[in-house]
Image (cartoon, rainbow, N blue to C red; front, side):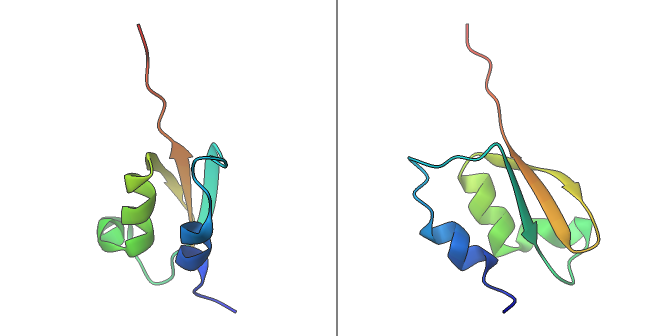
Amino acid sequence: MEGFDLKVLESNDWDKHRPSVILVEIINSSLNSLINESIYKFLVGKGYSLFAKLFHTCIFKIETRLTD
């Protein structure tokens, strides 16, 4: 079944499991319109940023913060 990426992401325990890279399928979305997608907003809210976009696959990576 297609279209369950967001439900799967929402079911994750983000305190226990924080993968460094996440690949999700976002169909019929251009690079310019990705910021309006619920999956994009969810992952950005969890501290990830868009790293690359393939045809339907978006690759997000966890943001790294430099500490002093």
